[in-house]
Amino acid sequence: MKPLAGVRILLTNDDGIHAPGLETLEEMARALSDDVWIVAPESEQSGASHSLTLHEPLRIREMGEQRYAVLGTPTDCVVMAVHHIMKDHPPQLVLSGVNRGANVADDVTYSGTVAGAMEGTVLGIPSIALSQSYDWENGRTPPWQTAACHGPGLIERLWSSGWPDPVLLNINFPGCAPEKVSGVEITRQGKRDASALRLIERVDGRNMPYFWLGFQPPAVFAPKEGTDRHALWHRRVSVTPLHMNLTEPSANLQLSETLDALPPELGKPK
Image (cartoon, rainbow, N blue to C red; front, side, top):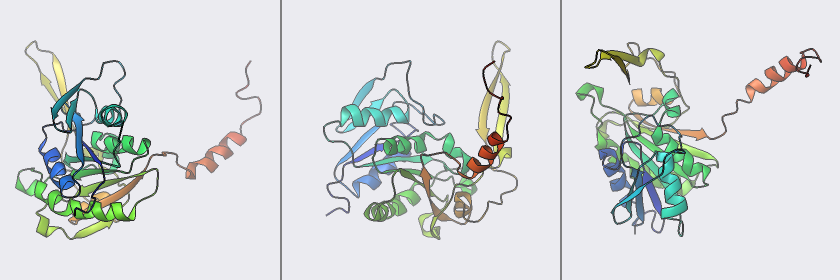
């Protein structure tokens, strides 16, 4: 019997319905359960974050048995799956990925992969985002076999133990061969080096400028211990619990004291 026998799993991603990372995720999910559904974007939605399509219609295309493409974002895909495609028997677990490249540090706020898991969490479904780091030493290729090897057992263990609501789990696999992975670490969200951002200016056929945004490995790589980036640097699988509530409680007292010190007349209508 499969470890998650009877568990209905929804797969989505932000790299699109034909992405190799989605094939890897499907392989992982089918090793766990026989009830696997795929609802993924028609085309790549990297960087879409937690965006909804509000000013264009959403269109669904059936690609096979329990496999659908949505002309929209990863968030749209989860919404359509839960409220339309699978409405009579919603998923019990959402897996989003496997993303091409890591989703760590500040990048989680841009990530459509993380957003797919966010939307599952918003809808009350345990959700996990999964990303495979690049192997920078071997031509910037994601070693999909690393996620495929270590992912199923990790998902099974996390599912069995559970995690608090409303928390989503952000899993990142290191960019190395499966046998070189040195362990699993529970981490916190790190900080990305802003110098990694590239802005490339070019000129089109009408002599008009246009730009590409991209990222490159930072010249100095010194992530703080305990962070997601540090774990990947040391070839460990990073598991980061992320909370949907973005409030920073430590700032409440300072801001309250600031506002209490304001003159009573400040802010009153004139």
